[in-house]
Amino acid sequence: MWDLLILDPMINALLLIYDVLGNNFGVAIIVFTALIRLITFPLTRKQQMSTQNMQEMQKSKKWLDMQKKYAKDKQKLQEETMKLYQEAGINPLSGCLPLVIQLPIIFGLYQAFRVALADAPLQLLDLGRHIYPFVSSSLIPLDSKFLWMDLGQPERLFLPFLPSFGIPVLTILVVISSWLQTKLMTPPSPEGQGGQMSQMMTIYSPLLMGYLAYSFASGLALYFFVSNLLGIVQYAATGRIDWRNILPWGKKQE
Amino acid sequence: MRIIPSHFRWPLALLAIMLSASMLSGCGGGQIAASSWPGLTVDEERAYVAYTSAVLAIDLESGQERWRFPSALDQSKLFYAPPALTAEGQLVVGGFDGVVYILDADNGRLVWSFDEAQGRILGGPIVDEELTYVASADGTLYAINLTSRDLSWSYETESPLWASPTVADGVVYLASLDHKVYALDQESGDLLWSEDISAAIAGAPALADNHLIVGTFGNGLLALDPARGTPIWAFETEGWVWGSPTIDQGTVYFADVTGVVYAVDVETGNELWRLDNLADEITITASPVIDGERLYLSTSEGIFVRLAADGVPLWQEQLEGRMLTRPAISGETLLVASIESGVLLSAFIAESGTLRWSFNPAGE
Image 1: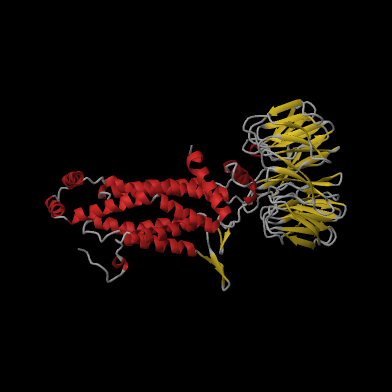
Image 2: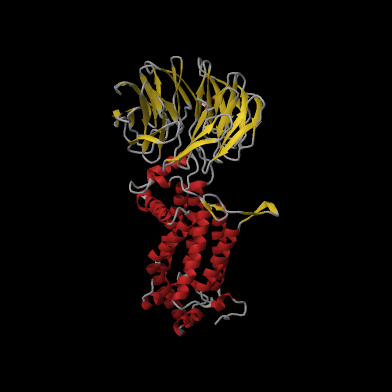
């Protein structure tokens, strides 16, 4: 079922884009990422709207009064918070949806890159089983080279004056772009536990993405990087991006 | 994450991290999966099996291991290419590390090695007099002098080479994943001709009756003129043709990866017969083997023996695992190598299919 619904469509979409774009797998990944972003845009937009509503609610007098009133009774605070969400028609779990959708896409992509960029007989035999009949066999084997990278392997850049140390350029770009995306799309946090957690997410989320980019095929890292950039562009297009969030002299806590 | 209440955030983030790490690791990390199937070669006394971390010599009479190379586990070494025997009793072994190892076939001791190749060696080396021809995944064919231990010449193609070359009449024929077939001068390595056939080739070309035959990933079999490389005929198949075709008495025998077996006239490319019902979910990557009137087919589902003249069944045996390696025959013994099974090598009486012994390296 996984192969039928996720893996096979991804592999064949990648192959078709690769075919159309002159057999460049790096460009195919970039275009594929843009398509994924486009397809998931309605959900992303919904999540952003929900975030905005939440932010407005958290600035309201009612919310602030409630925080003060039940500051010492966390159980009661949670109950009252949930009531407030219900009254405002906000589903707090709706923010999980993009995450839930992203996970199978990431797992599927990782597998798709691994299968599509087969570099040994058993793996190539496996690829043959995933290809739809209408996709040309003349594409096989795919060219995994893109710029200095082998998209089927973790990325490292070896410079002539530093031949023994590979610089993980793409990993660094993924960490920076993930941090930027989290920072730009997360409003300044209120004081207290919620604020601390939000700040920790700003640190840990890019580190997790960086770890994945460092350890796994650079095709996946390329997807992360391009996806982060497009995420920022999409958010900026809605006009709500706040560049002051990334500046040290930026907006202070309200 | 901002809209998720604080009491949901960390469990969800933790769940995402754990899922990401475990699923991605499970997909590709951890234990190293085999990259190919075993390489198998036989002489009158022993079978030589190159698979994962060792090359094993197995006594044909007893089914016991005689030696292994390397004698102690070395995780940097992997072997899949079928070894080649020289007239001097040496075994030429291509490693996944790109090194060509020359071993004493009697005891497995390393005599010398050649380490100029930069890519994995998947296609079996070919020995012709004092030269051995080794195709590497770095895209280069190396002609190595076994006497002087020097590189005689090399020829670079545009993509990895997985197929063994074919040497005949002073010409080395080379098929590549770059969709081309090359003919090189055996003495100098100079290019005589190359032909783009628009599909990758993983099996060695077969030469007979003035036809050079190659199976391709473009769902077909092609016959080329060995003197100029021009196409003579093309035969369409149901799936990729992985293994090298086998030519015997004017007939080309081959199979595609969907498990269909074909017999085609070498002169005309006309189909003589086909078998498309060997088993369900079957895969064939191995070249068929002809011995007298019998045709031996090693498949993912077992070993099938048919009458070469018309494909009529003689015997068949379902085995555990997948049998993707070309079977080998020594005297009256048929040898079949398996993967994804406890048994690496099985020996049958070729005529009847009676199991003589099976070899399990883990049981040693």
